[in-house]
Length: 360
Image 1 (tube, rainbow, N blue to C red):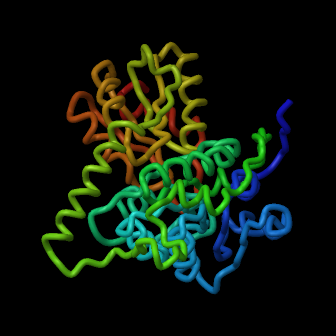
Image 2 (cartoon, rainbow, N blue to C red):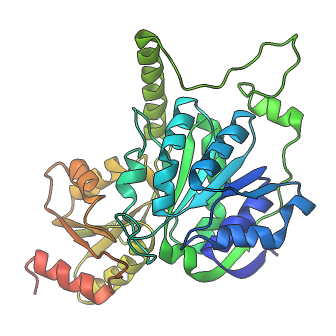
């Protein structure tokens, strides 16, 4: 029987990193994700698995340590919260430009600036739209439970190495801080040096002089070479958009009114759907699990049967633009959100939904 433990979402991230053979974690404490590093320090995986755990002097340093570890083909990761991830964006862009795999966990808090330590979903634009400079995409996966936080580390590294691309686990403060039972999967050993060479032949690994040396860089001084490389990245992103979209639906099959929400908002919207169904209103929910690639085709399909859609977010409406692009005018798209760390209740959303659809 699988072991189940009650833990916070942030703790699940740390335990998953240890159990999934991560080689190194480099980070810097910031609320509301500090338990990730605290749990790693408590568990001392350097004694049991050889995993490196290091508190850097800043978020900028930690992402560049991740850059170095990823250059050697290692499974390396970091975690932070919104202002800290802002400081990491340059390094993430460099890693996208060097085609290096890594996992970055962002447990979102309110902004802009230092903002609040309360939960938010206002990093959507920062992470899904790139954050750093240049034509690149992060692969972005959005957990909605402590179990997701545990499972998405393994999945994140699978995607990161498959596409040689940064993967961001985009969680909100509620998912990071909430406690739930988490089922632990069997321990995976860290890869040997030979296994790393086989999995990452592109890595800089201190090869002997008789073998070709790999150079890791995101720099090009030739416009034509850079353009060719950018088109190569675009081809990779096209494949990701075609093959890696993931979403879940709740009572959407016959729904006339569709809510679109991710993370903690999707869980609240499940209660909204239940309440409206109890009143005889055919409501349903689509939860994007991958925010990039975005489930545009599925949203477009549901728009064909819907009287309206409503994007529900803990921000001022960052995802709703992508929903509207997907819907392409097939039905009205409304938005409801809260900010500053305020969390909407199901009753609030029901009221705003009825007001928007003139169902009061």
